[in-house]
Image 1 (spheres, each protein chain N blue to C red):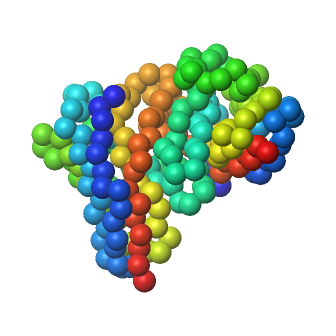
Image 2: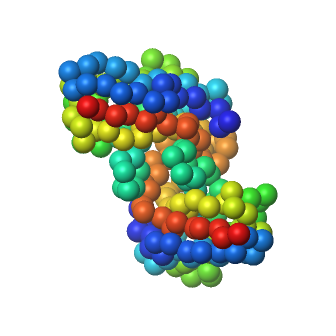
Length: 112
Length: 115
């Protein structure tokens, strides 16, 4: 699986958009980009994933660059409850299992 | 509520004890996972089961023994643990790619302290 690079921490003001970057320059053509988050001492929560098109759901938007070497997770209106560690993971999807390897992620602190 | 339930939520045990962690998923998934999260470290994948058969064991010490009796239940049997095994143990489940998105659904975790 391709390696990802994320900033260790970011701050965001409550009500503003939070833009979390992820670099995955060695991504291959059949690898998806997944985003999860982990609120303190809870299990990780799936947010969104995509292959090459931009994706949006009720939680967030995922913007993937045309060359697929980087992506950005956007939380449109961050709240205090969005304070968490956000993980960007690149993974081939299609097997019977989905063995996600988590890195250190980005600690997003939403400030009041 | 994610549909994945772990018990107990907290466990304190001595190094000579034998205990078990239990995970149950109510989502109809066919793959289950154990992850370990030590303090200030990334999640580490320990075991993976698909259709009740273990498909991955990431060099986990034998003092951790997984059991998957059916597709809804997963156990982690613990014996003669060390203090460095103190961690948050997370269970997850997923569905194969023919249905769903392959996303993992995690339980809330079992916080283990080894004295």
